Length: 568
Picture 1 (cartoon, helix red, strand yellow):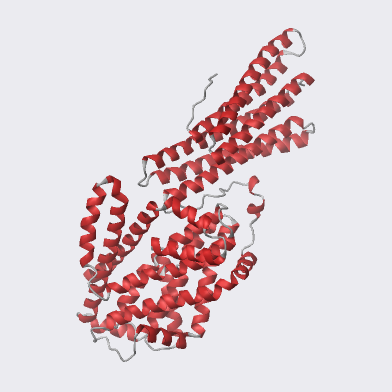
Picture 2 (cartoon, helix red, strand yellow; picture 1 turned 90 degrees about the horizontal axis):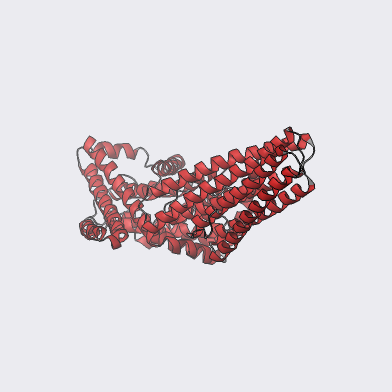
């Protein structure tokens, strides 16, 4: 019995690992294209549906498509309306998996696994074709897992434990409402635990094709799998923004609504599917065609349910959007996120491809730079503040921003380091290292902003006052620094070398202006226009702005891969 249990668990592990390997390999082969397709082919609900359908059929994972969709909504690349149509299409695309599995019960699909292993290992050692080899290995593991699962299931039915197994399941074979709901719940819970509807579908087909489980209860497991598979995206979306949480909840709502209507019309709907698949209750498990008929009926029911559900709900997409917007309300942190630490675009865990993970990290770095720019605006406000209470309140906000800046750098760096642990090309690794440098330099900009605020605070505590000329010079330096920060944000978004050249000229202007003010300061102190201590506070601010400009250029250099022409 122990050997049989481990065979079942091992075959499920092979199946799940094969699905994961094949899906990841396909996404690596078409990573950038998937991103562009999802963004470009969702102009209306119907193109969005077909996009989701074809992508899911290609990558063999509705979870992967849904997670991609949720992440794009989180990054602002897709609207909620577009995401719902893509998710509807993904529900149709995922039915292809069930048909692949049903083939395994029609003939010995395991024989093809060994050819796939052989071809795959050759391609893996041909480094230029490694991803294709990974894909073939994934296919081979799927075939081997299905074949082993089928053989082990048949051994259970015909072996020494056959009577005990049949007796156990016979207690639940009565077509009662409670038994049906029990198997619906079991299907949902198992899919949630295993995180793979394909694995539970394989178990369902094995139980039904061997006659251990009635086909009626098998379809209840299939319906439960459709609910359980939606929970993954909802778990991932917990740390995402409100639109991403709504997209994940829309996925669950679509499948739950589908299960509700099909339960109401279950008998006529199932009878129609059986007629199409050629399955009859008169066919006995001893019939040599029974395994093929049972597995095909489950696959046909899965397809018919999802296709019908999509054709019904596609007309109500705008109403689904309103429903999820009413249920998922914005959190307080969503409306005032600048005052609280929360990554905006990076959700929990890395995505299934480096392409998508880099996309989210890029958006997060741009958001990080935007926060730092806002921190500098607070410093400019601090210079103008004369009231003590208002000054202290503003300084406390800057301190809080500085703490947020430090934590954002750590979180983004940890995320990118996780991505680096995967199998990546040299080009992708170079991108990630550049982004790590960007994060470090942006954190240094935050430190400079905090140093400027501290210099203003020290000046206030010393009751030192700047002259009108000094204030004019500081304002001019702040304006140059602000322009540099604005151009940095533009370069981070566009990666434009033209904008990088403009930034380089601005930095050169900052350096020259700093040098002029430094020389003038010595003359002004010597002439007694203000005392030495005021000059120290004044130069601290001017020098810190020049350092900030250097950090800005370091960010731009990391983003564009260029070098500064002028060093100071």
